[in-house]
Length: 374
Image (tube, rainbow, N blue to C red; front, side, top):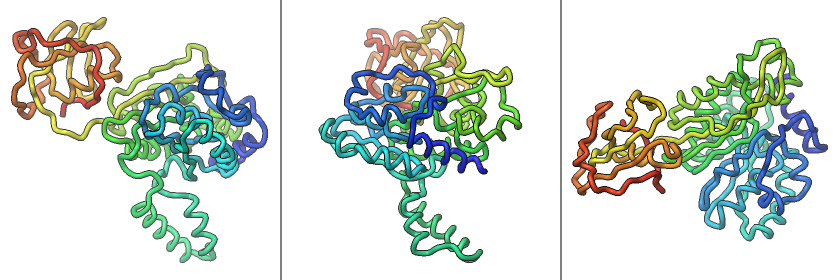
């Protein structure tokens, strides 16, 4: 049995009856659970709560939405101006989630949730459209396979399930580990593709403290049980950096492992990240001060921020470093006088004279988000 077939079978069983060994204990916001049908709560399998990163007005994409629990929680937070899209490949889970769409729309006061059929490592291909196509054009021979591939590529290009740069926040709850290792890089590239510039990621998943050996990966029960497909803790972060995300960090890290198998610890974590803004890097006289406690820190592009020093930054980097993505690690200093911006020369470690920001209002955070210097 393949990895995908094993996962489909295990979660179809989970849609029929609750599978206790598929989920970690999680403290969800009780106020958001109040409106949810008990069946959705009982048949949800997760290891974190990415709904707490949702903002009003967000377009949210939930990868591997299962029973729809996180989607319906997020729907209460995005409001009427926002939207939540749940993607899952399992028909039984989709049927369960869609069963309560009307009821939840009435309770929330907005029909702002949609469930679509797709693989999270291929967010361009609409599997409902594929099912319909196969009914009309079943596969009988090798030539039919070739025609099918051409049809799929056309669909991905002309009618993608999730469009490029269309999502404010991508969330997932204990699903990335279920994807085959050969597809994990493509999966994270797909997350990057669909996220808007300046958009965010909040992924709850299982990681291992050591690489998972091959004999454990071949165990279907361990794989479909969210164990043997886990990425090693550093590899998980690095995969998002390699895809192009910035401000990649562990926002949540369970000190106690969920399970220990052959001495390898498997624990629940939540990773957050930001997709860089697609805008020029302009110097308008901004600066940031790194608060400490380290003597200096470097960003993913190698730029250094010295503790207590007024470091010159371009405007978009200023927005990023003073946004919630970096918490309160940096103090932002706007230019003392407005001036015409010039293209930033990308010098790393340049100090900004105090006179250029003297008297400006200090910022601990900003409502806007940006990206690191070019």
